[in-house]
Amino acid sequence: MIILASKSPRRKELLSLITRDFEVIPAVGEEIADRSLPPSEYVAELARHKAEEVARSYPDDIVIGADTIVSVNGEILGKPKDEADAKRMLKILSGCEHSVFTSVCIKCGDKNNAFCEETKVRFFELTEQELNEYTSTGEPFDKAGAYGIQGLGALLVSGITGDYYNVMGLPVGKLARELKKFG
Image (cartoon, rainbow, N blue to C red):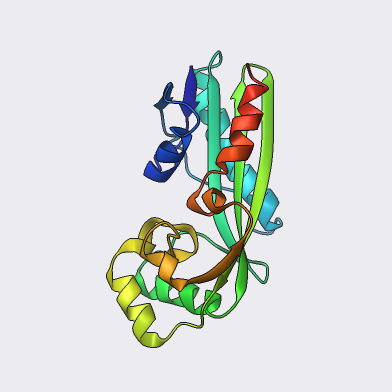
């Protein structure tokens, strides 16, 4: 059996593009990693913790842990705490390019595989009115970097380089290939 160790509805939807034969059993432990690590290593720690936590209870199943962060100029942007934090993050992203890192850790017994995908995203220069309108929708509050490219956040994006699904939270093509290694 395949287990997705995430409560993200987007990851569930994206994993269903690969297989319909999986269960969602979210990790419940606190997400802790060393923020002084480079962004790709930081997010890898978060994904590994999720996969390991769930795999302890399901050692014979294939467990997928994943996490996504946004990074700009070395600063890691997770999920905003409130509307002011969301606006702060969006102002940082306004008019510039940033990286979206999604790390995936796959575990099954003693076998494990981990990878990190990076996608570059460019934002339009955002006006104060656009910031207010977007944050008032509520969409930014459960998303790394305070935006969802698959929703109204698409209106903020001037372009991307890399895997679109990675920005949504799960690099589908790469994950499908990595899962084949588990049989």
